Length: 155
Image (tube, rainbow, N blue to C red; front, side, top):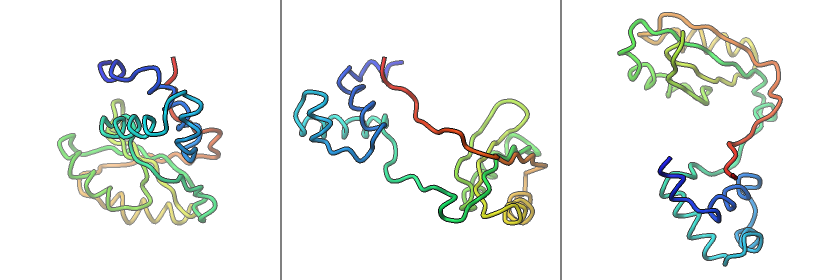
């Protein structure tokens, strides 16, 4: 992978540290890596520009804000060529937090958070299944998220 070759061991160590604790001060990262705080800042900015690091912010625990039902929905399209149009309409539904173009039986696979099963039913019936180009859906409710992590970046 060409991009990984543009990252050196110091970059990978910085990534490993900040993915474990996104709030760690750069001075602490600098101390652990053995470079200056300014160098950490420059390297992080460079990795943002290279899109190695994407997004920033806090992860919200859906259960703590009354979104109790997590589901995954496989979407079948009437025609594959409708993908872009359907995705633009799916983007308008705020409860959809992930959308993937996939191989296999589904053209699109989405992750949805709903307040409860009734709310999920409403999202499915009155929003997702009303989108022109969607022929059918298959829904899987997650009973529990057992862990979540980012990809490993160390060798």
